[in-house]
Image 1: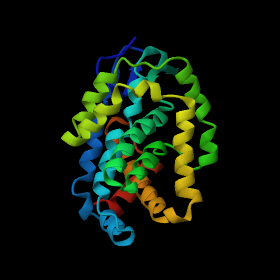
Image 2 (image 1 turned 90 degrees about the horizontal axis):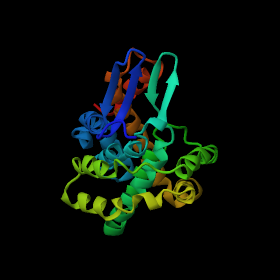
Image 3 (image 1 turned 30 degrees about the horizontal axis):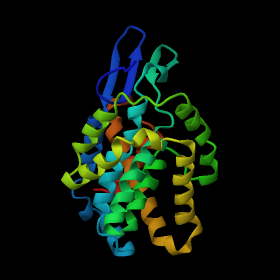
Image 4 (image 1 turned 135 degrees about the vertical axis):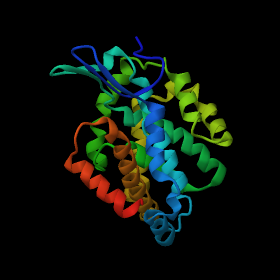
Amino acid sequence: MAITSEILSYFLRYKDGKEEKELLRDHIQGALNHVERIENKRIGRFVLKNLGVSNFGQLLRYSIILHDAGKAFFQSEKHIRHEDNVEYLSFSGHEFFSALIAECFVDEKIRQTYDFSYSSVVFAVLYHHHAMNFEARKKAINSVAKIVESGINTTHLEELKRTLSEFLDRDDRGILAKFMDRLPNKFTRNAVEVVQDKLFKRLVQNPQYVRLKKLSYALLDALIACDYLAAQKREAGRSAFFDAVKDFYDAWLI
């Protein structure tokens, strides 16, 4: 059973029935609001000068648009968790699904442009909630496999396409349309392992990709900052991690 016809990025239900929620499209827009004219900000200038990458703003926008796309498959009561006096919608493992969607999108961008900098988007999406330990993260694939084996909820597939399309131009909407209908068939344990192994071999093991590795880390940091700042409006209070994110944002993104 779907909780709502639109895709939620956040959902909390109190014992008295009161609910707090945020739509995915609103969260994406909130994060995008933090990256206007990013090419002129310190991080944009740094990436251009030191890595020769002129489209950092575009890469960050793609990362923001796609980073929570996997939440579309966690929109049912079976993903509701209970803690103290509240119920909340758990999106644990969504980053793997988001990364698979990003991989489909990025593969087409690379095919069209021969620009491998787009693969940094997949890296940022996959690791935006977790430490960048490739070997340790492989263990988390087991939990994703259980989700896949229990059946993927495709109720919100069309809504996901509409939501993502709102933030893409005409050409990119065409890329999205090419693979969205076939998307559920791509959600397999093997697919997750392939994506992660590809990133590991390209960014860690291959010395020829040092520039891409540096770009991926910069993109990940920027994505985390925009993601957490956009989410802060719905969170009560402040945390040490939020303060660190805000310091990074103030130093590099304004």
